[in-house]
Image (cartoon, rainbow, N blue to C red; front, top):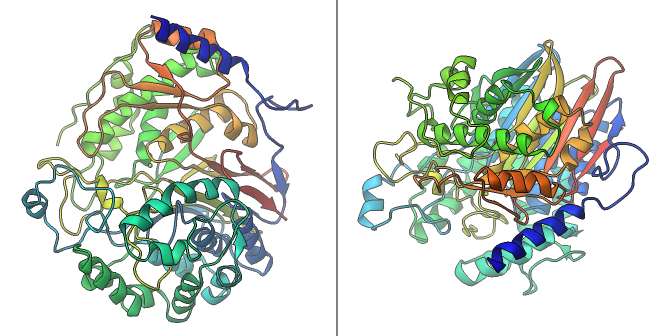
Length: 563
C-alpha cells in the first residue's frame, strides 16, 4: 500500500512540474516558434545534417536531393539510429504531376536461411544482434531510386559534404552522444570492427568530441562514383556477404545483387477534412489510419487536450489497431493483407463498438475474410516535398560492422515471427514487418504537411497524436510536436508475443493528476518511462501565402532551417 501511495505522490509531483519556460505567445509547453521561409525547408534530427540539406537546395538541388544529402549525413552523424546498413521508406509530393509517390526501400531476408534452420538451432525468436537478424540493407538503392526519378544534382555533389565531414570530423551532439555511450562500448566487446570504426581512440564518442569516420568517407566516395551497383554488385557487396558468412550468417552476394526497391501507392483516410497518407505494409503505417478512423467517431476537441477521455479513447483505438497489426501486417508479396477493409469506415465503426467509455479493454484482432530511427523532411522552391524515414532498427543495428566500410548492418530481421501460419512468419526472400513509417497530409488535393515521428512501435501513436494536436486541439506545427505525449505498450506483437492484459500507458510530464487518477479508476495501468516518445520533424505548406513552416521538436538534437 505504501509503495502504491508513493507512486501516486510521484505522479502528482511530476504532473505539477509542467513547463520549463514562459512564452508570450502559444502553448506553455512549446519550446520555440516555427521556422518560416518561402524558398525551401529542411528538418532533421541533427543541425549539421539539416544545414547540408539547405546547402543542397541553394545549389539548385531538389527536395529529394536535399533529403538524400541529409540522410547520408545522418548516417555519419547519427549512426545510433541510421545508416547505409539499414532500410528506407519515403513519400514524395511531386509538384509537376501533383501526385504522391511512395517508395518501399526495405530489404529481404537471405535466400539460404530457412525456418527449418531456426528450428534446428532451437530458436523461438530471432536474436536482436549478430548475423542472424541481418537482412539486405535497402537504403542505398532507396537513395538512387528517389534520385533517378526526382533528383537534379549529381550524386557526387549530394554526398560530397558528408564525405568532407567524415574525413575532417564534426562535434557529436548531446542526445546522439548519449546513445553512442549506451551502444558502441557494448558492441565493441562482442563483435569485430566496432572499436576500429566507432572508438578509434578507445572511448565512445561523447558530447562535444570530434568524431571522424574516414572508412565511411571512402565508401560514400565509391558509391558516388559507381552508383548503386557499387554497393549491391561490386566490392562492397562482396565485403558485406563474406563478413556475414564468416560470422555464421546467411546473407549472400546473390541476395545483395538481386535487391530492388519498390514504388508503391500510398493509402489514405480522411480525418475531419484532411487526407492522411501512409504506405501499405510491410510497414505499420496503416495502424495510424485505423486509429484515426476509430477516433473520428468521437468529439475529441470537446474532451480537451490531456483529459482522461482524450487519453482513454486514444489508447483504446491504439489497442484495437495493434491487434490487427499483429495478425495481418506483413510483406504483401507473401501475404494477402486486407488493407482496404482495415482502413475502412465500416470496419472502424465495428471496432469502435468494443470500446467502453468507463473501462480499459483487452481486445483481439478483428475477423476479416480471406525500437531508434531517423526521420527528415525537405521541401524546395518548386513545391516538391519529401517525407523520409530511415533506420537500422534497434539503435545502431545488429553489431555487424563489415571491415573497412564504416557502417553497421541492420537487425530488422528480428521482427519476423518464427511460428508457422502467421502473415509475418519468416520465409526466405521476404521483407520483415517494419516499424518505420513516413507520413503526408493533403487538403483538397494540395500538399498540407510532410511529417514523421521516430520511435519503433510508438510511430503510429505519434502520428495520430500530432494530427489530433493540430486538427482537434488547434495547435501550431511546433506546439504539436512539443506537447506531452502518450505511449501505450503491451499489445500483441507481430513477432508473436501475446498481449499483456490491457497493457500500460506511459505519460510524459505535463498531464494533470486528476486525469491520471481517472484513468487508473477505469482500469488503466499508468506510469512514466524515459526516452520512448520518439522525435518529430514536420514541414507545413501555407498555400495562401506561399510559405513553408518547419518544426523540429526538443526531444532530439534536431533543427528546422529554411531560406
